[in-house]
Image (cartoon, rainbow, N blue to C red):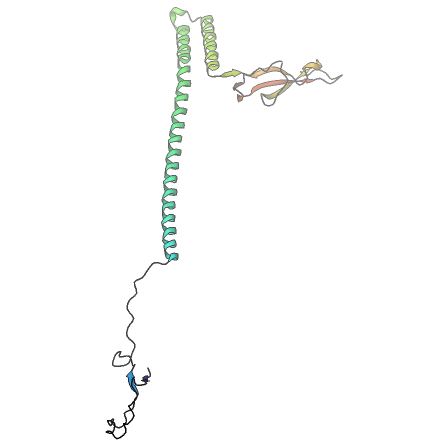
Length: 225
């Protein structure tokens, strides 16, 4: 750094010599009325500038926002993880409840048919007993009673037989296994024989009826054997 020297004018000008008086006080050689003031900064001996004082770091507005955003993202992540855990636990509970209800429904259905199986066993035992004489009539009657009870249990479960004979063939309710030639035009396309009983539960078909469908015989054609 360059040295700067400031020269100021003196506060008082030298007094003029008085007439007939003493000569004014002599000033040292080289002295003048100017006052020299040294304005050079006294730093280190090497002339380097003094180190700046440490400034306390103050968070900027952007840094504050970044911290707030990071905190909000962390809270959102924790919230999403908690919701995912709760959803998984809810699905697991629902699945367990559905399995439990399905099992209970199956148990009720099976339990309702156990007495029928027992009745069938008793009918067979009675027909084969020596005192029963092996009566086929008794066996038939027993089986008929069991069939009636079986139909009652099916109805109690909401299962009803599908009407087939005399109905127009409906592929959603009937399964055509064969055709029968008919001479009556009104029987053409109608179910003329039931080969297997069909059932439905409400509006859902459990099993379609297996049927024979009437087909009008062509004029002059010989009847099918």
